[in-house]
Image 1 (cartoon, rainbow, N blue to C red):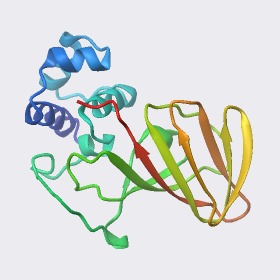
Image 2 (spheres, rainbow, N blue to C red):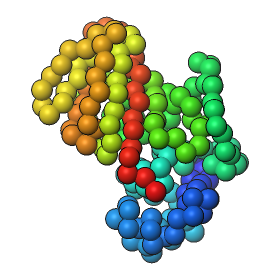
Image 3 (cartoon, rainbow, N blue to C red):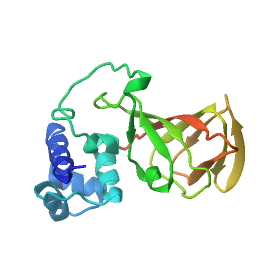
Image 4 (spheres, rainbow, N blue to C red):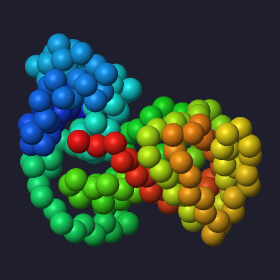
Length: 189
């Protein structure tokens, strides 16, 4: 991944949304100077910072990683994503063995962030983020942990929860689980 593309995407998206560096700094709790350096640099910030910036700008991190010119400036009202077109994207969970396939990646300004997730075989991370989340088990079995309590979920089971509360999960059994996850962030610009 060319880091210059990431920094360009941050600046382009911020400007397209009419957000000042001061406003972005206020929302992300990062300094205006640091954000300015990110936009002027050829070096992308760490993932945790990218996640804060993406969240504040109302997009998923994968939007900031998109290499294709003009992706951010497209205004798409409706997107159909065929199975063969789904892209594996990097998110916080990727660092812990989770795989995320983006659905509707091209849809600009979305309020919901849908993924097909394959959780790691062992619980390695706990997640906590603003908003709400819906998970539907498409294949296999998963152990879902919420507020420290464990729940066994099988194909066809679903959970809807406040994602600002610590949660995690893992695949159980020989076959890795596949989950449809839809995240909703309501703290946006």
